[in-house]
Length: 454
Image 1 (tube, rainbow, N blue to C red):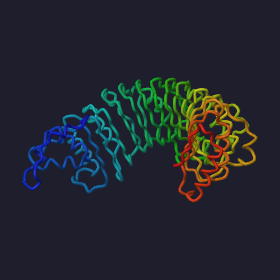
Image 2 (cartoon, one colour):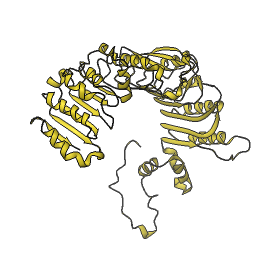
Image 3 (spheres, one colour):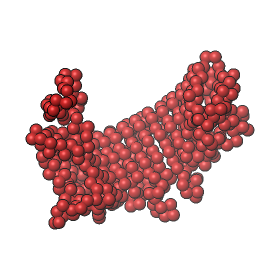
Image 4 (cartoon, one colour):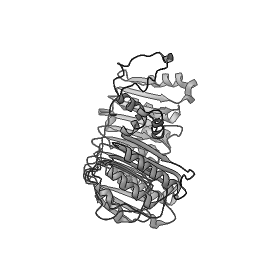
């Protein structure tokens, strides 16, 4: 149900009077209660009474999980049998809006998946997730998917080689998640994304790119892009694994990119991005120079961003580009910056801050690792323009009382002329030292600035 039914008008019964109070509930209330249960438990209610036999068929959300079982039909594989049972259950249902089917620890034939998709299309499912842990063979996405005009959200998790035929199209698809897929070739990638004319959200989760080299496509309707590419999905000893993916995203608003130098994502016309999170890890010591170059390239395309979050590994990559970091653009629109500090130099931090003239809020997650050479370098560095004119909020999280971090906070307090609040979220490690640290920092905190410890 789209909303909870009115429960205020329910009659109060004595539990011991022996009446079947649940069956007396209004149908809308029963449907709402069933919608909160796992699908397998919902179907089991059909044996309770005649009234309950087909009650579950009025639900619109189904979540099936298929694991290893003993076959109930000697003529078919156990997993095929269960797929067939799910198909029969769907035919009994009156309306299916969201369907999730997940298989674990069993092999599924590509033919069975295609047959199941044909059934799903007939039911006009709006939200579909198919997660297959072990898929046998190479899979060609069936063209019959094109008939699914009702589909607006799709999640495909196929750990196999996926080929996309020409002419594939999802005319109403707005959200697409692709997980653990091995794309067969460049054309398959481009056909899939170009076949989504109204796509707004795209997630590429640990896809394998070993069969692709140079991919280029445009999604003018895309608003949110999430990329997660773990380093373990590539062979760093084989440089032929390198892949370049260029995406024209002229209307993109949000970017979350967790990648590595072996997969190069280039964004074309990313001038509309409002918020971005960038994590670029370097797991191969031989690729440090490439990592630094990629870090500069990624930031250079985000000059219009308003909210930016950078991981510790990304800042480490910037350290590898100290000779070219001055090429970073000025982030004129940036008002919120989150930096997760690790083993990077104070110069890298300052090089970024010097490029943020209108920054209003700065958040550091410092942890247990100190800045390198902070004691010697900090007093000699230039004061960022934002400290003088715009920075109003400053937060330090996971603060553990390291002397280098105290110096950094002191530097901000002494130079941030319009600072209104500073919030320090402390680790439990400094409980015994907290009073001393608080007194030390409050001595340099301006009267107009509110300092809080948490």
